[in-house]
Amino acid sequence: MGVLEEVDSPEPDAGNGEANKVGRPGRMLRLNRAPVRFLAIQLGVTETSLAPLPLGVSGEDHWTLHVPTPKSASAWQKLLEKAATKLKHKQFWGVLVSVPGIVDENNGRVLFSPNLH
Image 1: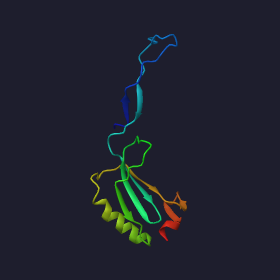
Image 2 (image 1 turned 90 degrees about the vertical axis):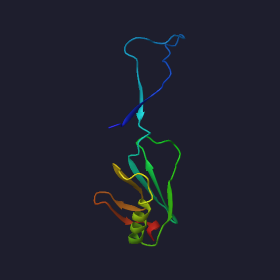
Image 3 (image 1 turned 180 degrees about the horizontal axis):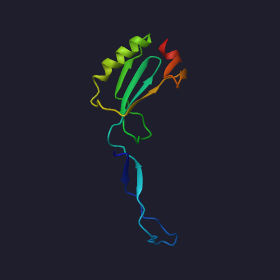
Image 4 (image 1 turned 45 degrees about the horizontal axis):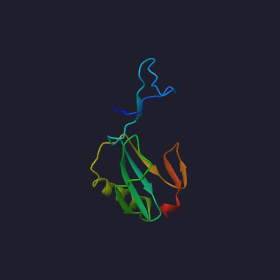
């Protein structure tokens, strides 16, 4: 599934300047940073940002699209549908949404968000 990727790592040092060669050589792995797997959506007061993301992300934000945050949830949904057509990637494992406020995670509902006015 491409969840992990192997990365180059320095040879381990045994503490005396020689590499420790006992056993099988270790391999450094990390979450794959290449294929896009998720769509991230950040709901801001004045702006909503969207970004296709891989499993492994860097420490910096790279938002692909920025659209104004509308006054209602229904208008926001329509705006997201329109913005999604501009994204190059169409297949995602999931959507990650950052919504400040009170969220009912069990029922998948935003109970109150100051950013949705």
